[in-house]
Image (tube, rainbow, N blue to C red; front, top):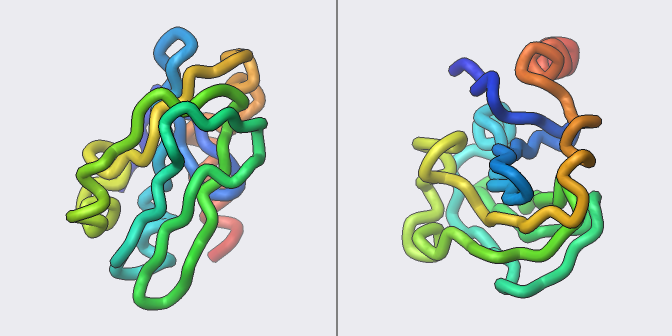
Length: 128
């Protein structure tokens, strides 16, 4: 799977899609494939204020439980409640319908320090 060029990526395998100060967050295809079948997603509460690097939620699979970290600081303004009943959406569409939350970024420029798609692909190829 290719990685969307308009997204930014973290070394912890999260992606963000920045639109102004709104950052949609999810985990990458690489992350979901390493986790295996996702069976539960713990979503953050709307209104939660996070600093970059704070735990945003968790993704639980048949193999492991993994924290999802906030790639930017801000307030959670929306969550993907569909994941409560269909967590496997993260496996089938990690860069689309499998998004986890939207953060209203307090400083959208924090996203500038994240990896672009090419750099992220280099990172995961080095891990393998």
